Structure formats: structure tokens, C-alpha cells
Image (cartoon, rainbow, N blue to C red):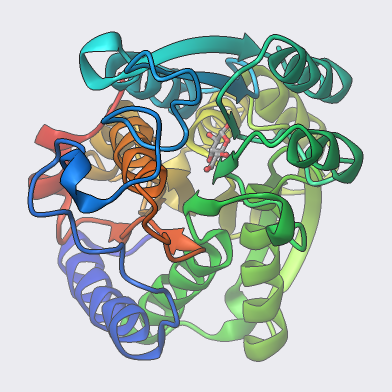
Length: 358
Ligand code: GZL
């Protein structure tokens, strides 16, 4: 199925034009709010009602905002980079004291950690939810306790009334951009939509990341008449992605599928491990991933992965600066989405040097 390098570059160029066009013209993604004139918290002369220069959210007026950070766990390279970005920015020099909660992949643990933040008097709580389910009671408890909640990374759909703002990725937009890239590839390679038979590795079921990326793909399948041959979760983890792919490969023929769509790099690494274990060359297939870890971007350079829908993990500084602005009384537009695009052979040389993680 793979084409010559020249055709691939033509395909990718066509796809990029297509994808960028979609993002630029059709996107309803609001741009991030303009950066403040300076990153430092505005002086008290701005009339902030807070008890210090840090604003209203520094309730005890000691110049430090105590932030409870509810993190999912450490399931992927994306998560590692994301956690570090928060630990790097939420430091006393920037006006923060970070209390870190690692849910280790367990929903109940994550909610219990948020309740601990509430009982321990956190002044702000940042939630990056494992899944969308069952959050309303604990969010209500935070609201009743007068603690501002920030939602970042994965959006808590339909619960906007409980948090100050959402900053993170437009997951459906990522799915749509990956579909647009594949449409461009098909057109540039004179393929037929009937050629597109997909093995679909889904992320953590019920998470906003999995839901948005799956919705994007399924809308593309509906629109173009593609086929999803097999669909199975790998929970965003390499080992589970490999196990899922190995099970699928034991039940299909190598010519039964043409596309591997993995909803993050770690599962795609696992899928590639499973393919090579049975003698399949991933270069013979169209491989689409999400995130953009350095190793995955290198695989784009090496022609192993064809496209990565970017998902930016480096949210710490941006969330921190938005908290400082909100603490001074600024209304932060919500949702505010990270600006992301598709990485492929046409832009990989620019992306590789700045790719996150390992
Ligand atoms: C996306 C993030 C997802 C990544 C995965 O914002 O929630 O979770 O795509 C990570 O790699 O595990």
C-alpha cells in the first residue's frame, strides 16, 4: 500500500494543504487569549480584590497560590512531559505551591485526591480527568467550598458550570485533522475509499481524548465509506497497545487491513512491535498516530509513521499564567484550545528538533 517516497511527499503536501485549510478556515477553535502585556501578575493598582499581588485566589495573602493538581498517572510519554511541565512552572518563584496527586490510572483514587485537596485547603484545584464519568458530586463540593477549579488536558464535557475555564486540546479537532490528512493521502495516491480498511486502537475509554479522536474517525468513515476492520482499546499504554494489536493480527490476514490508526504514540509503538513480531513491515501500511513524542516524530522521518496529529503536553506554563490572570479578575475564554497541526514528511524536519519527550 505504501507508495514511492516522491508520491508520499506529494500525498503529504496535498494532505497538509487540505488539513491546514480545514483548521484555518473551518475551525471554530478559539485562539488562545492574547498574552498579557507582561507575564508578571499585574500590580495591585489594577484594582484586584485579592488579598495580595497574586490576586483573589491567594486567599491567605501570603503571596503564594496553593494548587492541588489531579493528574491521571504516568501511562504515556505524553503524560511524563505534561507532568514535568506543571512541576517546572508551578514553583514559588512563579507564585505557586504545587500539591501533586497521581491517580495512577484509577478513577476513584483521582476523585479521592481532589477531595483531599478540598479538605487540606487548596486555593485552586487543577483537574486533568482520567475519564468524564462521575465528576459532578466532587466538583460541587469544590464549588461549595469556594475553591476555583481549572480543567486542563481532557475536557469535562457538560460540566462547565463547575470550573473556571478549560485549557487543553480540541480532541475532536485532532481527529478531524487526522481524517483530513488521510483524505489528502488517498487523493494524492489515486487510492479508493474502498481501499481504506482500518485497525483502530482506542485510548482510555470514556476519556475526552479517546472520545474526540474516535468521533473524528467515525465521522470520516461515515463520510468517505471507509471500513473499521477492528476496534480495540489499548488504554494509551504501549504494552496494552501491543497486546491488542497482537490479538487482532491473530484474527486477520495481512492484506485484510491497510491503515493502523492509534490514538497515541505509545499504543502505535506497541502496534509496530506486534506487527514486526509476525513479520509485517509497518512501512507497508498507512500508520496514523496522535501526540508527537520525539521517537514517534523520528518514525515519521524514517517513513514508519505517516502522520501524527499533534497533541501538546506542555500545558503547565500556559495554565499557570491563565490562573494568575484569572486570580486578578480576568475572565478567561473557555474552552481555550492549544494550537496544533499534523506532523508528516512535509514538516517533520521543522518539528523533530522541538519535539517533546523522548
Ligand atoms: C491528550 C492526553 C492523552 C494523550 C495520551 O490530551 O490526555 O493522554 O494523547 C495520554 O498519550 O495518555
